[in-house]
Image (cartoon, rainbow, N blue to C red; front, top):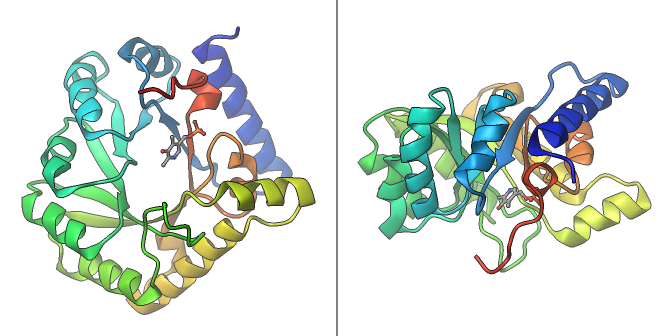
Length: 240
Ligand SMILES: *Cc1c(COP(=O)(O)O)cnc(C)c1O
């Protein structure tokens, strides 16, 4: 089996070539999703030049960040898991945390906001597929209100953009039928609408979309941030 270093190198080349082929000038930020993976794996990726890492579990983030902030001083953590009131502190107090991508309700936003003591980039998670088991804003008005709060009222939150996970079905359909992924299309529409509401340029809102199975499609549809895990670190042990 190839190493993390090799897979990361191959992935970067593939992304760069894909951007060139589709005349995309800004290569998206690659977040290496390292949930359930041991610190040695993150260190290997870091030594291969990777700086942005995504973690899903508050306690795991807290433990990993405490150690890795010393060993890998330039590491940047992005929280991409579901947030509950009781674990907000584990997330926001993690050293080297730069972003939270999964703010999905006004209640959690207000709770996070109250406890912040330094700046953090935030993304609003959108439930573009409408699946019941997916987190994220479902109603546009709720999303707009959250965006307005973050932009105009929060002292420490910097509105970075919008994030979606999307459904497996939409991802498969897009690949099989060679059509745009409906979830990614939807997130772009929301980017336009939120920008309009906030009176900013849509370009000022990043889009975090695309994972191991569909990051190339996401790039074609305008992703500014992609979140890739298993393709870099190998399959995860599901019985976490
Ligand atoms: C686990 C996870 C990923 C990465 O998934 P892979 O399929 O391993 O690339 C991306 N985004 C979120 C929100 C995740 O939970």
